[in-house]
Image 1 (tube, helix red, strand yellow):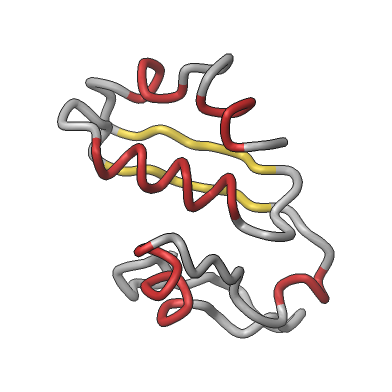
Image 2 (cartoon, helix red, strand yellow):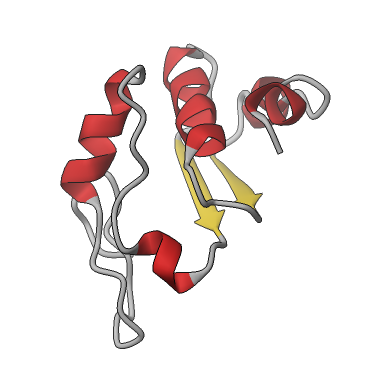
Amino acid sequence: MTESSLLGPHDLPARWRHKRVFTLVETNFVHGGVFLAAWQSWRDDDARCDRLHVVAIAPLEALDAPPSDDASPLAAELARAWPCACPACIGWRSIRGAWC
């Protein structure tokens, strides 16, 4: 799924506006491009929900390193918050560093 196929036809900004929480499930989180685009769109939206939850599904080996996208200013922030990919992990760090 590409950025435009997620944000355009599904109109995520309209769906998360004025809500307290919105959950996005990304079923192909190999390169992270859709997540980074959705995160940027969410941050740019003044009427966004208070909290955006993202459930990302990918093969475990794809999670060994954070997605790399040099064009995205958020990619470095994601890389700093990237958790270890191990079966023993019981929680994932959020971008703000809290366990969830």
